[in-house]
Length: 287
Ligand code: ZN
Image 1 (spheres, rainbow, N blue to C red):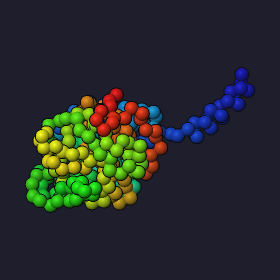
Image 2 (image 1 turned 90 degrees about the horizontal axis):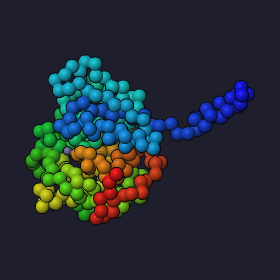
Image 3 (image 1 turned 90 degrees about the vertical axis):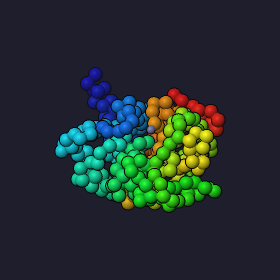
Image 4 (image 1 turned 135 degrees about the vertical axis):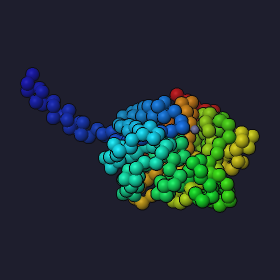
């Protein structure tokens, strides 16, 4: 018996070393005009499914709370996912976060996270486009997809809007990018908000997915970029504007792009397998 143990234990440990360890991920929430108490557990579950990620969650103090003890150790993680849309963080925390991304950290901006920090220049460079919070032409141009390329437009007006929630079709704009490879060229996203007229520096962004914001739903008639990457210093940013609520997050297209985008932001590669039950051009797929 003892001899068997001596023999099997090293093999067990050797196997553990070669099995891929989960990627550490930090999800930030605590303030949001959305139900972060519901959406953070879904983000965590979707990321951890299949063992690719192990997520910690850090919850900020509530609005007007005491931030003196809020100092997440961003650098401990290869990727940070923001589900935060609230008050500015203390300057030292913002500086740490900026340094983390600039030095090569991964950052995922999820849905209303891009409503936050209208005055924080570096953050807006990281997300490339943001909305609400008093954003206007001073925040930067709007950016739309026209004739197969990104076009920026500096006309005055508010930044950030959406029409009524509905199912809408997403167009894959770079089918060779690791985040999008294998995704249908067109896929129907579950009922969600379709952000439009977003504004920001719009620099170093690479569009992965757009949707036509139809005027019949109160939209702009433009192809709005909803999924894209941004290069910030040595860091990789994945920005998804999708996922207003549980119904929208149940879309397998949301799941795939979230999980692949987070892996890409963390490592620059995508090794996970594609889900099989993907939406088609005219049919939503949910789990
Ligand atoms: Zn929303």
